[in-house]
Image (cartoon, rainbow, N blue to C red; front, side, top):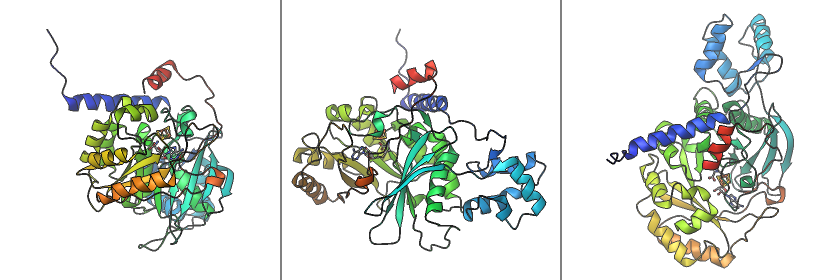
Amino acid sequence: MTQPAANPAELSAAERDRILAKAALFSPPPATLPDGRRDLVGLSREELAAEMVAIGEKPFRAKQLWHWIYHQGVTDFSRMPSIAKTMQAKLAEKFVVGRPGVTTEQTSTDGTRKWVFAFRDDQKVETVYIPDQEEDRGAVCISTQVGCTLSCKFCHTGTQKLVRNLGAAEIVGQFMAARDSYNEWPTPTDGSPRLLSNIVIMGMGEPLYNYENVAKAMRIIMDNEGIALSRRRITLSTSGVVPMMDKCGAELNVGLAVSLHAVRNDIRDEIVPLNRKYPIEELMAACRRYPAASNARRITFEYVMLKGVNDSEADARELVRLLKGIPAKVNLIPFNPWPGSPYETSSNNAIHRFARIVQEAGYASPIRAPRGRDILAACGQLKTESERKRAPRAAASNAQAAA
Ligand code: SAH
Ligand code: SF4
């Protein structure tokens, strides 16, 4: 007797659980210093209140602290005047308000700034600020993992094995440290302009393979009494982890960007190997289900232009066919080379021909000018030298092989 076919919703829930369980194998180290003090950054409001109760304080202290930490950007308890001196001392004994360490900070000739941030275990990631060239605004490109389990052929990060996931504190910390660097505290309110006005989760790593930490970090960043960045100013980029896209849409509903890069499964299998698991049809179906997909908030499709690989007119026409019915925008990214990279950037002609076909079908298709190439800060150029220190647990390496 054959088993009745499992229902697709159940299959996808099982797959989601598997992805979440695997993410837990690559957890960040605990948020406690060697001297036993705990970092308050990265705790949810409820967790912060619980910490206060645990030291015999009233839970409302959490609200005060939240304001100092996320609205004022203060890292020193003695600079929190609404908190009594004795209480400040008690807090300083038990807690810190942490930041990642700045290993290097470089500013490109075009204004793009890149930091290499080091965490407590000395693992490092890169974070980039890309200022708008006309207005006083710009996007901070945030990393979510040290390395990446996926190995997209054109991506420098993809050559670095996954070392571990970043914790919520480390994800929020990148944005806070970037704000420190531009002195953008306290948080501008009432819609007044912000230099660091947007977040793109497009740095190192696959955010949907570290969903819990990313979601927690985004909830902190979106909280109205703190950093208060609207979900409309946050874009999460995924290489296509289909089972997690629904969850992300239902729970966070931030802007979505999808690293499509090819319109035929045989080519996408080759350059974005995750496609072998979640092929183009499934990916496009998940995009159609994504709640943010309205004309006001289109899904961004990222498409790296690789000479002779994915840049023909036929590819452009097939792209238009795939996008049918999806409120979409296509970001054409000229391939950014890195040491040893196996591809060439498409010619200007090919890129413009491609853009025209997509545009004529009614989709905006800006050609993304490379930013910060001189400091290796452009898309796909991020990589840190850190390696996995301990042997991964057996289950972790199996899971990784299955990814
Ligand atoms: N892992 C996620 C988030 C990284 S986003 C994802 O892949 O979507 C970084 C974007 O830059 C992705 O669209 C990625 O495919 C693209 N990219 C990677 N390497 C690149 C390169 N060498 N040149 C241009 N874009 C690249
Ligand atoms: Fe990972 Fe994204 Fe790079 Fe692919 S493009 S290897 S998913 S960081």
